[in-house]
Image (cartoon, one colour):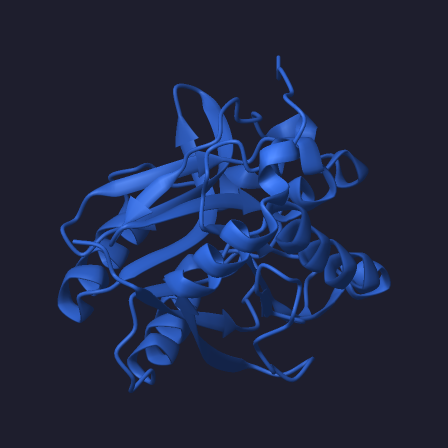
Length: 260
């Protein structure tokens, strides 16, 4: 069944360094505090650990404690929950976004653009494919942090409705985060949502949040305070997408890219 509206909760939160148990506890409290009925809850990148280059300390499997926990929450709350965490599989470590449905089904996406400035490419295996998730009749394209800088990878060749980024994006480059989220919405004529953490990590990197959602014209439709733990709910509408795509038809003129 196709929903004409999709309610998404953006969870702007601090993360406890390399401590999955404590992060699960505090995130469950935040999710329990959402009193309104929503369709999707979005957590930041590496929500069990912070952006660590020490995957051995926090890596789990797809049958591990965090996956079991989040599947239980999704079923109990009848909501989809998404965010990324460190997953170990076939001898490799991945920065993997999971999208857990109330049914227990799991969709996933492995971060394509590992952050070379921090050496992420040396300890994590890069993903090779996008995954367009259909949920309640909405096509959602989930990507992770550094992917935001690469518009060809995000190009809307799949006719998705929502472009979704989870991140640990630091304060010194937050202007780029703001500008690129807006640009991705405009150029792809889709909603674009970014969920970034707040707080200070063990490497003294500061994260200011700036969680936001933009509509297909690049108008910001959220108002989350920076540097603050806060959850905001945004309602997306199919009619908004259809109205402007039918009126402006910019996607009809897009270039064809062949990715290798």
